[in-house]
Every structure is written in C-alpha cells, then in structure tokens.
Length: 126
Image (cartoon, rainbow, N blue to C red; front, side, top):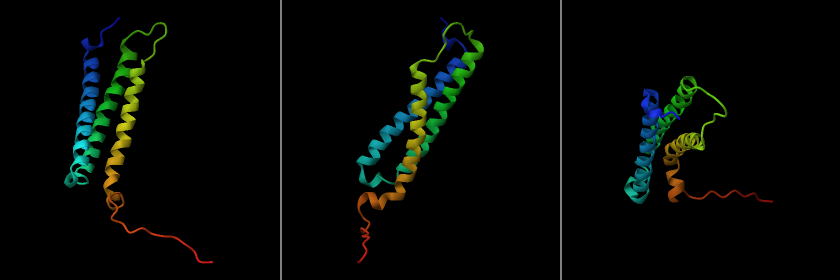
C-alpha cells in the first residue's frame, strides 16, 4: 500500500482538485444568493459561469495529473483500476463545464424568463 501524498505529484493532484471543488462550492453559494436577490439575478450570473469554467480547469488538471503519474511511478501488478471516485471526478468536471455554458447563456433569455416578452401566436387561416 502506497500513500500518495508523500510525493509531489500526489499533493499537486489533490490540491488542484481541491481548489476546483472549493470554487464549485463558492459558485453554488453565489448562485443561491444571486437567485434570491432580484437586483443581482442577471448581473451576477455570467461571473458565476466564468468561475465554473475556472473550477473545471482546476478539476481537469487534477484528474489528468493523477492517472498519468500513478501509472508511470507505481508498479502495476494484478488488477489495477481507478476507483469510482475517479469517475465521479470526471462527472463533476463535465457538469462544471455544462453549468458554465448554462450560466453564461442564461442572461440572454432574461426577458423570456421574467415574462416580459409579448407572446407570439402562429395561426393560419383556411
């Protein structure tokens, strides 16, 4: 059994993924605040989207460092596979990217969300 945090790459992978996770938690708190206060609703959203992209970059850096250095420095014997946590990390990174696009595009539809747009009716006469 090898403890990974004694090596520099293990600490780097853990630190970059931890920074990405902390940024994700900050984005979650900011999104709750932005949607709770009407004056901040659509002024704050694009910044949260950008911060989500930064969180995704940090998460992906940690998720790339870990398997590359793990497979090159630790001897592989028997059945070696990454745990479910590695797949969960990639799922988190993909969700951060998708939510970043969502939060960046959401202010474009502000009028439709708030109901300020006059409905358009499509009909044809016989």
